[in-house]
Image 1 (cartoon, rainbow, N blue to C red):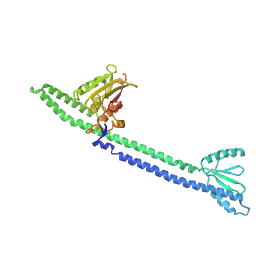
Image 2: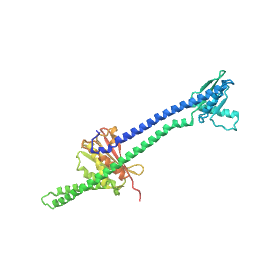
Image 3: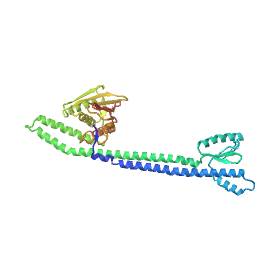
Image 4: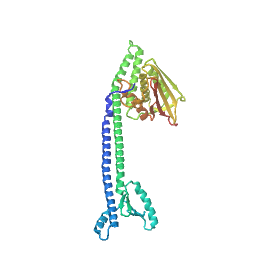
Length: 402
């Protein structure tokens, strides 16, 4: 039933490609950062492993060499080992005794307490999944366990921080694009509305003058003049509606049932006689709400005309006024039309989405803006079922008791 139509209002989505491009750049930056950092981590892991292997080789050399061994070999390696001051290392000899470097321990601890602490640290190091280095001393095998340096740990978390930054930038960019789009839409709405009101003003003045001439013409049927006057008043109402768009309209306490009944009386004689409209109210007598009558009637008109179109000019429409939760007044407008497919429920209020081949897709969008932006209410689809009908709900806050 519902379909999207190609409209001049397509400029609402012209920044879509910018969003896609921006999102693509963010993904590329995140991917490149992860790839580059992963390479650095791999190289640093290999370098640290080589340092520990050098340490193990030095220990094995010292422990197994004779007195005439080249001692310079030992000192050269010790010099290189001292360059490592962040990699935690634990040496476990054949008897199970533990020695360590780069693990802070208080000098006041006893030997037993130091061994207990090193046992705890050893479990943490093993949990980092670095394969221990085996040293064959000839008479026994000993092992070197090592953890990751502080730099390596920071690099492991660095991609996550980069990804978080990219996500934040992407989120801020999305907000910026959305805000820009809404601002552009608002400028278009205001400009179009003001220009329409301005353009209608001149012919309306002329038509009013012609009606006065016809009113004094004895050969003209007075009923025709009366109907022409009503249509001119209708055009004046429409002009007032457009002039209120873009500026904060004046809200007054109006009897909701009276406003709706008055408008429906006007609407009934201008739609198909096969559409039966019924108004029911469960509100207390003279229940008022803060509304701008001209704009609120426009909301009712747009919803009702969409309902008439959905029913194909034949069916029943029910307007039910009742009180809801949290001091809200509900106006439910139900029809017996074709209903809205579930896939299209989220598109109904979007600019450019229409059920008609020649529709502009602005009626419900405008109605939602009027209710939510100017009346602090809410317009939503309460329910819809294919081939059974749809119910729109207008929610308005009850005025504060003065």
